[in-house]
Length: 358
Image 1 (cartoon, rainbow, N blue to C red):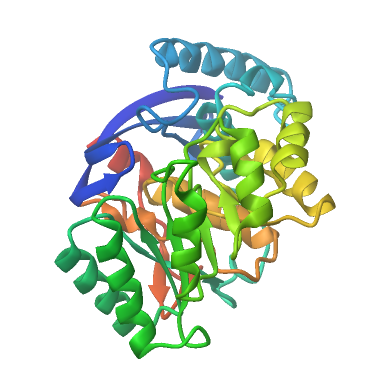
Image 2 (cartoon, rainbow, N blue to C red):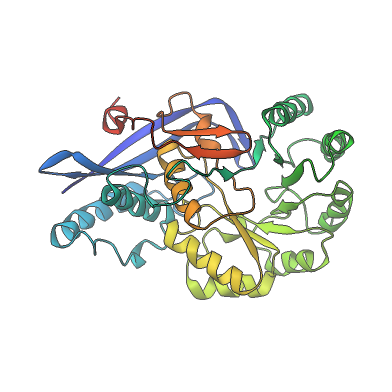
């Protein structure tokens, strides 16, 4: 087997506003495993750290990726099934771990159906939330209306970018037209609130019967977050708080200290598939709920996350629609219908290698 790294820059259809700034492009590295005797047998994994957010957004990233692929090539020659079965050395590089895991899953499956599930067979969709990006009042207002018309029953709004009272106006507008039974609302503050005013803001937000809020205060303030989770009038979900917490004992310490109502897993940020499963297992033991979200991956990464998520038998809406954000994304047998992400096994698989080399 040959292991190759192909870098690629993706371009957003419209600027993506986040708590870490506005993204217009996305740098991605793809790991390609190819059977030296049969070039049509290959597996592709996506490595996509987020600038200024991922714990593995480090200067030596490409060096680590190259060394990882060199060792992977050597291990595969010895035994494919045991290649990187133990990826302890990659705990601090979750996006690389995710890329290796999913390249191997693709290679073993010989198709984009990594695991056999009703989703991979096209029989069931995965419920997802409609994501409303940060923007000014008018932009967010129109985006909300568009999602509602498309049939989404769960909408997630990123807040903290405009005046708080304006954001409350947006929520009030939705609630005037749709009850909690018709539209479930999630908000993501991306750490925008301060510990001193967070509880008061949560009380004001609770008037709109929200499902949950992600990361009300910035990560790293465990005691303050624990107090909020104890006193909050509606559920808190941790997201950025989990980044960089890669050792099992540290995960347990965080969950036992903060006791959130939910955690949100992004495999590229939170330990790959293996690391995310550790989080989910420990959270479940403590009665803490969870759901899975993609992190601005292309359809290659999105499909891998969705195929894995389907094995978890999700009931809550997941966050799996971001592969549609790019102008130069690769076409995959993925589509959104109503409020679900679907995989169509009858659609011909794309020529991934050709797309990678464009």
